Image (cartoon, rainbow, N blue to C red; front, top):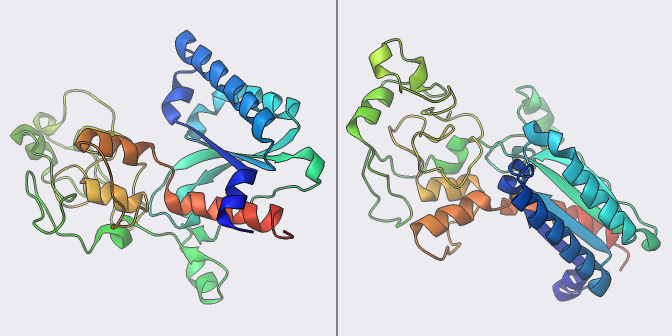
Length: 289
């Protein structure tokens, strides 16, 4: 089966995390309801064997179950059974902790079912022995993704990579963070004068070299954001670092201004995660064709 033929038989939808966080907002809820209706119309027109939805939806907001229920009822009405699972991107070889809900719909009349396979990557330290046996692999880390990049401090830039440059942060913020060890926040400083006046302990916080990067959002360049600080350099993450931990290859070309590029990276489904799920779908649903 050619790639074009597969594309005709699979419909892929994506919803950003922000939509789920705002589902209590009437305008957002109405917009989401309208989009579900559009999906129903597309299903009627295309009648694909598969429907895959990649929902940017944190486990912590699973209270928005009514949204998932609406989707499930909608697609069931169109003749699809829905399988859903919370996955973390690092389990599929992405050097980032990024929890999302994946929903896969299979047309009932083709008499096939989809099962999420056991992920290959793990954070478990005992995975080393399993890795020797080819059963598991150790999760990739921020170090794995970015260690070869030039070290940059506040306001510096690489002269070989146009996407690897550091935002210039205020001097008082640098002073708050300069002595903060990896994995810790400026809010934890012993000296109260070196603590940010507001915010949570997840803000002004450094990533850890030997762990998957924290979740990349559209504001990864804001040093005050959630774990947006480099493990040892005192600055927020660069566009190249964010692209790397989202699993974009260096040769990928991003379009738009800097803000649009950051938005594209932060909202993206990591390509390696998308590829892994797609391979499972093709192997289970289309293997006889």
